[in-house]
Length: 184
Image (cartoon, rainbow, N blue to C red; front, side, top):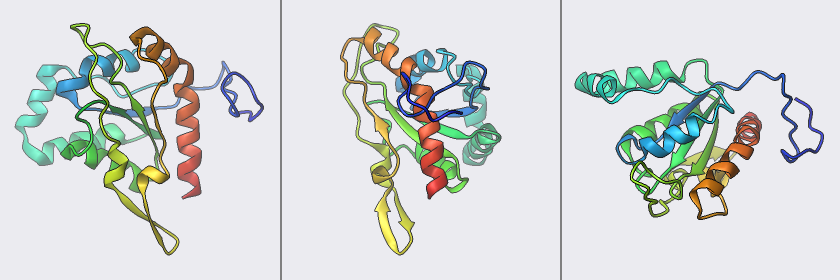
């Protein structure tokens, strides 16, 4: 990874570089269509999408089964990308994924996806930043995780522009998240 300036900002992503393995965290019921758009960009290597049927099977096993599934999915990942929709913040399992990722020294980054269209062609309202719900100790000081972890909100309202913006920047955001986590 060269740090010379390029279209990626201060990080230059080489064509030959292996894609980072990431975990995508999102509100399945509300945002799975939007999340699939980001996951299918192919810019970073994400966790294997779970089908509705598979997720229902995992949920039948209760909280411990869900926790074990998440823990297994996080293995070997260098970063967790929280895809932030209208109702992402405050959800039990998203909170678990954020906390587990941070405590496991993985990079963590948020991307607002409310302006991507869902399967019915609808956008949603912007949700609140899920990192506001966490406080971490840095040295002798307590800080909101949102003051450390970045959450990117694409500066467009047209879904195709939002998609293009995320695709163009996601690799850089992942690298930056990993670098930030390495500082803390």
